[in-house]
Image (cartoon, rainbow, N blue to C red; front, side):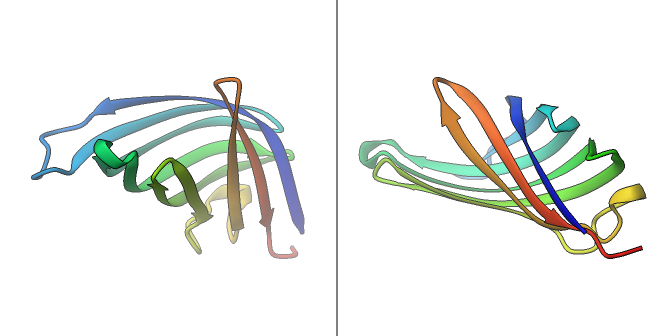
Length: 129
């Protein structure tokens, strides 16, 4: 079964614990609205190289939401980089992390920024019942 959802989200990043060398851990809190409604919590580890406008980060985020009438949770795995101002980001559903009606969920979450607003597009599949 194909699932597709679009909408916006608000995100709050707060320092979480002590930095390990030059790597700074951050706590992720999100609220999703639109065709996927819910919240998430996660942890991110990143590094910035400001003199070159470059950065990199990895994160894991547990999303608890309703998606096309199906409720449950799943984990997103992030891998992102900024190469001299050019952003690259991958956010995929960790296989077999889905719970409730979202058990077996596979897919990805695409992100774009417009006028300071975070927009998402969820492209996913669920196994046939």
